[in-house]
Image (cartoon, rainbow, N blue to C red):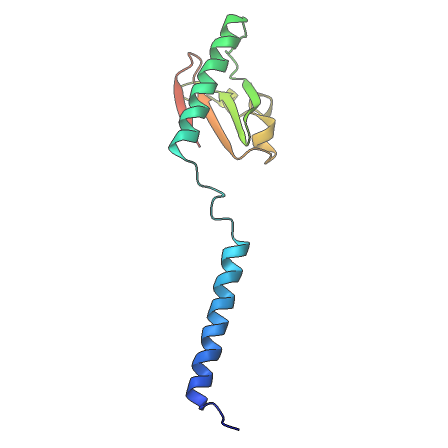
Length: 120
């Protein structure tokens, strides 16, 4: 019976270990978690502006910077803020609970006139 030279065995073993490590990373890491596409941002902003217009027509008072919705799209909320930002914007009751509690990762901030302030 012929034996494999030590050097060849070492190379085969290292190759196997590297492949297993790479596959483990690929299968266990969520590479898309924080990635937002331009289309998703555009959709979120357009939906936020549409919702703002609906709430404005209903006569909602925006002066305290309320959360417009905790469910704009999956993982998205819409928050109203003053521009420039005021202390009242940081009060818990004026922020979207879903974002504060970690149930949503992204938000659209509109100023009291419906203009885009920030997207994250």
